[in-house]
Amino acid sequence: MTDHIKHNISPNIIGKGTWYDKAASELIEREKSLGRSLKLIRTESGLGASGFPHIGSLGDALRNYAVALGCRVQGYDAELIAFSDDKDGLRKVPAGLPKELERWLGYSVSTIPDPAGDCHKSFGAHMTSQLLAALDTSGADYHFMSGFECYKQGVFDKEILAIMNNHEKVGKIIEDEIGQEKYTEELPYFVVCEKCSRIYTTHATKYHPESHTIEYECNGMEVRGNWLEGCGHKGEVNILSGNGKLSWKVEFAARWRALDIRFEAYGKDIADSVRVNDRICREILGWEPPMHVQYEMFTDRGGKKISKSAGNVFTPQVWYRYGSPQSLNLLIFKRFVGTKSGSVLDIPTHMDELDDTEDVYFGKAKTLNEMEKAQASGLYEYCWMLKPPKEPEVHVPFNLVLKLARLAPKGSEAEFIISKLREYGYLDKTENGLSKRIGYAMNWVEDFCEELPEIILTEPEAMIVKAVIAELRKANTPEEIQGVAFNAAKENGLNPRDVFPVVYRVLLGKNQGPRLGPYISLIGKESVISELENAVKKRE
Image 1 (cartoon, rainbow, N blue to C red):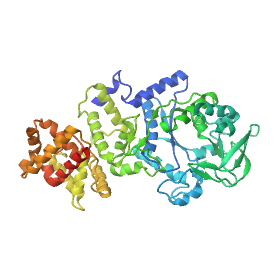
Image 2 (cartoon, rainbow, N blue to C red; image 1 turned 90 degrees about the vertical axis):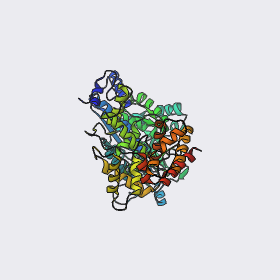
Image 3 (cartoon, helix red, strand yellow; image 1 turned 30 degrees about the vertical axis):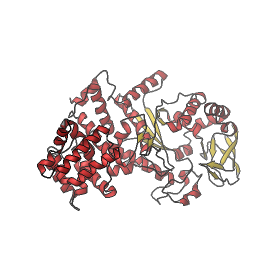
Image 4 (tube, rainbow, N blue to C red; image 1 turned 30 degrees about the horizontal axis):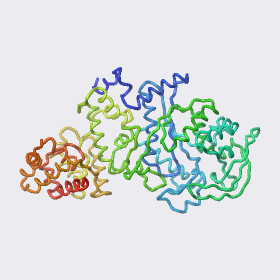
């Protein structure tokens, strides 16, 4: 039995030792206390279908999936429901798409033509497919459901009737929770206009419980600061016909009850809607809502929320061009709460960090205690969706591969990189995974050329780098170049062990690397000095 399996039998460690195992354990105990069946535990994530999915969209789904995995680890059957919100209307044309799409504002995304041509049956299907493809690449398994199809097939009929039959109570709950009076005057249901086919220009005005019909008027609505003019049509539709949908203020509750959802994490941007839906679930549908955990949103490097419509979308497909699926899983899984920054420049760091967790998993790196080892090993297993490789991959600082890719002769990049890594002693045991890593690096160099992740130095670290620069300027022979770090330490009363990690972190993004002399000779003395000086300037 290997070390990383032994850890899971400790009575102090739940499952694999991660946050997701702890959440799954709490969920299981909660469901037991509610007396509900544990035959199948369902978690859910809504898939936005109105714009390009970004890494935050994938993160939404994978967080909920990981809790399902945690339930499986503890012996229970569980699955993720990947629910596409493709009945929703288009509120804004996403950045990067033609302005002509404005003619479709207010229409359900499942009725808008595919903006990419004929690869999918609708705008919504096209956007959803990209997120499903990312889920597939991540290694997740899931049960896909389409909101458009669910309404058409009557999946939510019982819940729609209960909500509409109690629409006055619903309106009062919404007003109590968030102060919105809208639904004390209007019904929480969007009808698809029978004349113009828009869903966001109609107002449901009167409900007839005996016939399950709604009277509505298509008189327009303000959406994202723009007024969508209605066609003026007045009509009456059956709420069970699929010719409309529930408002978000009540739809979550309907989904949770109809689909038997037991867990759904959510971003803080929809906290109000979740709170309202929890009450509707209990007080209108008579069903205890799922267990929740709130998380922060992904942001770009400027601290702005990553948005489908704001033009700062960082898609999973972009990450997969420059880094492994498991490295993106690591970014998503390693910390559940707290804001996360998503940038291409973070990829090398997470590739290296994945190597570090793999070293712990295979017993190649020491940890402080059994709990820390279990947590790191468990995180690694979750990054591989509980199907980790049987042996480790080659570990090469990703920035080193990037720099070698920049220096490699055109047409023989892989051969050059491999030969240099052999010189540095990185390929003594295995080349498993190296070809993929070289491919990621070559894609990076092709697209970004000189752009590398930023290293922010502390003041003491900046002083160390300045000392190394001074010694490097004086060094000319290979022997002198090899000794620059030792000389910098000696001249400044430092321990060489304090100098090398700082230099390697600036040059490679890690605290260790190949022998410094040969590396500097390969990269070029002036290029290395330039990199070190840039790191100091950023500090200043």
